[in-house]
Length: 102
Image (cartoon, rainbow, N blue to C red; front, side):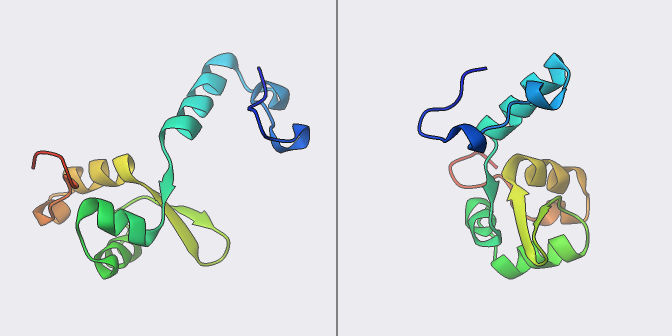
């Protein structure tokens, strides 16, 4: 696997070097390249909701997140939208985001 330009050799670990199966390695690369993680503020802006609403949904366990350190959290927008659309209680929120049909 070619190394991305501009990164030192030690900064890039390929899935193959970790002994990951090729199909899983392909999924890992796709997930990393196509799905940036958002902060609470960025997610709130993307969904058109208040930051406090994001915090409440996180605390209630209604939206998925990734822990970064002790207090930091990051969100995958697509996973959050799927979670909110599949949850009948939270479906009253407008989760289509800006620029999409509701």
